[in-house]
Length: 446
Image 1 (cartoon, rainbow, N blue to C red):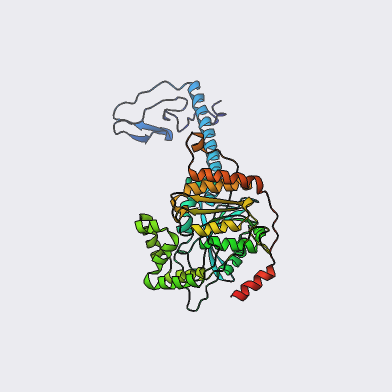
Image 2 (cartoon, rainbow, N blue to C red):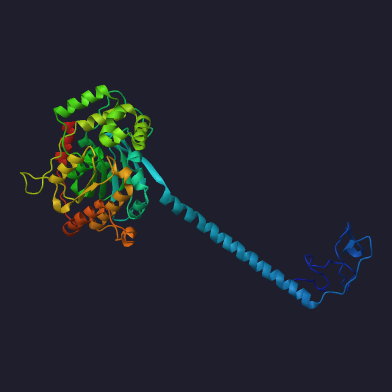
């Protein structure tokens, strides 16, 4: 029986080496001798048997019982099974861990690209994987900013995280405006606002987006509105912050020239971004952006972008039936402006040119010239309601309203406007503009 259990040879007189007793004694007898406790050393006796030598005479104990031998054999079998199971589990875990880390990295990593366009390289940052048939959120910044300075506060706030679960975000920087961009070479012709709108399809096609929801601020809002007029089939909706649809006249041109002679470029840009109250108060936000504009954006590239924005043309938009050859934005639009912002009157003028059944006008209190920076949570909530009206984001009950808090004036105004847009602004079929006319217009303007 001992030989069958792997504990003995043909004679059954061999003991396992890892047993709690030591091998020893003569053939046919089993003696248990204790290991040395006080400096003893093992030695080899007669017939090559291993035994422990001590200063005193070793004690001879009774042979181990058959039950003890079988118990030890069972322990060895169980320990072997546990080792095999541990190796199997370790193998399974090592196969799963790289997959989990890869999936986590694909969700958290922001990828940057330089897209080749007819107007040069466009710096683009992609956040999040593609979300099926849902449109991508494409952003375009204002003059004096880039996608980090313009949209980091908005897209990093808690309220925006629920939206980003459902959409891929594509941040586009104007040529030479991203951090660390090299200076444009001498004689470089900076693209016009129309040309910038005409190269955005290159970005959309490069990443395989079927449609986009545009979010633009200032000059970026103008570019996205022009893009929606050129390619209405590619635009599902627009959020236009501080948009000025009017072109610059001779008086504006002369005023900007005189301002450039008496003040520096960063100070001129600040008057475009902030309200007079914010500039006179010299708030911490104004000081921070003055430093960022002076340090993070190349001065020559910024001057080229600023000159082209001041040379923009008026957006040819009219409400349906209000003019000959009426042309307007056919997608849902949300216009946003802060109170006392430098572009407040211009946004009101833009609202009068759009279809009221698909346009939401939001004037945010206590937000100044950059509502996406000073009030990112409120703007994210408004954006969520706008997307819900388009049928893309599932309804999520506002915890603040359910807790019994009184909504602010801007929220109440948004709710009343949103009710009209949700009831009347259904899915619309947009017809693509004449591509040949657009290409010819861009070539003639260049």
